[in-house]
Amino acid sequence: MTRTQSPGSVPGQFTLVLHSHLPWLAHHGRWPVGEEWLYQSWAASYLPVVEVLRTLAAEGRSHLLSLGITPVLAAQLDDPHCLAGMHHWLGNWQLRADEAAMAGDVALGSREHRLATAALSEFELRWRHGASPVWRELIDAETIELLGGPLAHPFQPLLDRRLRRFQLTEGLADAQHRWRHTPTGIWAPECGFSLGMEADYADAGVTHFMVDGPALRGDTTLGHPVHDSDVVAFGRDLTVSYRVWSPKSGYPGHSAYRDFHHYDHATGLKPARVTGKTIAGPDKAPYDPESAAMAIGSHVDDFVHTVRERLLTESARIGRPALVVAAFDTELFGHWWHEGPQWLARVLRALPEAGITVGTLSDARARGYLGKPVSLADSSWGSGKDWRVWAGEQVRDLVELNADIGQLTLDTVDAMLAAHCHAPHGRDHVADQLVREAILTVSSDWAFMVSKDSAAGYARDRAHQHAHAVREIAAAVAAGQVAKARQLAAGWGSADGLFPGVDARRLTSVGSVTSATGTASTAAPGSGPATADLGLAPADPGSAAGGLA
Image 1 (cartoon, rainbow, N blue to C red):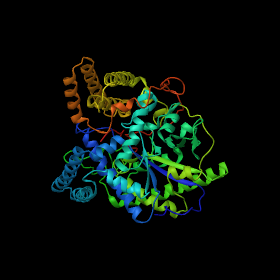
Image 2: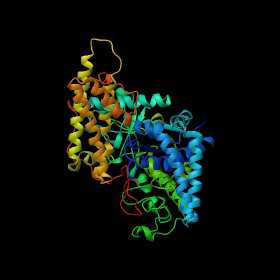
Image 3: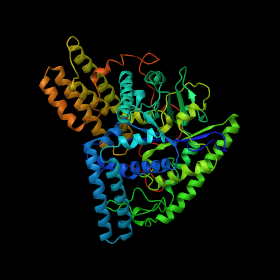
Image 4: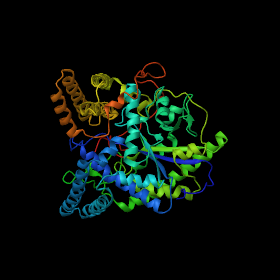
């Protein structure tokens, strides 16, 4: 299959990067936070975004974008419990649409019924037995470049380096298992970085990764090797990315687009358009698809113009063809921004028509969009572009919890493995489950949700629940209560049985190592360049402050 287009009349390359991620939600609540969040994102974002990519691939287009799929999300999209739950959810969506029509809102009910029926048909045709074949088709056709990542999305700079390396290598192995493809590029969770991680990336076979623009001091027009390694950091261009979405503005806040936050309490459907930033939900105007379609066209034109001008000006400034990278959460397209998938399809057609070369991060690396080596500072894409969201005072208890659980897990697993070192043995499923619960404890999502006051209670409960699992399994092991330890591991595994290939014995293969500075790197909360935030659960610029669906 040929690439999207031959080199265009505009110098340089544009790359779109999407990051697909949700924490492990299966068996951990349903509404308002829990599996409902997964099913909403699946129906509103993953199904339509894949359909956009499949349609464009059928038109002969390839190398469209770099798509990150975290292992923990991939696990849910392949999980039998989640697949059954999603099928039920889609059918329930149809019923809710019928209820809306019978209650008198025929336009809303008819529109939602069409969407639900199409989604259910697509799910039954292509997704019913898991998402891996769906993603693999796009990867094999080179429609997308797959970006990988650590198993359960930890904030890596704060993680014990041994566990950090384990999560990364296991995450890449999980991608190979699911898709027969090992990513060479990754989306580092929260774009978190600290000194020494580039060495871990190189050891794992990673050749490039994403950071936010301020981590490169705004010099995002080229990728940059990090320190003395060959691993390249690509930076998100905020000038272009914030045109689509920023903490204060962006296309989804347009008055004609469907409002994310206001919904009909009887059916859970969303009947209104944004209308205005200061207008209360019940006073918002009804959603009008035709008005929204007109706004999409305007925003496609605006984005293409913005990218074109940015490539021209930056290429002239640096005296060579420049690179522009725009990056977003995949869930923005459809879940948060209902019209996002339509905009995405039209933009990916319009860019090459405007003479703009579109390619992936791997393409950019292969084509030589590389500058001088840089010494990256501690950074993230969160508030302040430092670590405060995951290491600030408001989550100090979670930082301490993560450190305690990480050390307890390592000590316990080491003791268990040492006890069997002189006898032939296979996998120890107690140790395996201990590791699963530990990696779920240290997920970056819990601190993010607390710092952003977005279902903070749920997030704290989840972190402590998984920590409790680690502690009680470890206590049984320490007491020599073999039968109890097995019983506990099996019980927790019924809810948290993700990553069945995780083998605790491989913790020894990553070695007891220290960072390039001699210890695991930490930094004072609040340090780093100050700029705006874009995170997992953004606020709607056309409505009230956002939260989880």
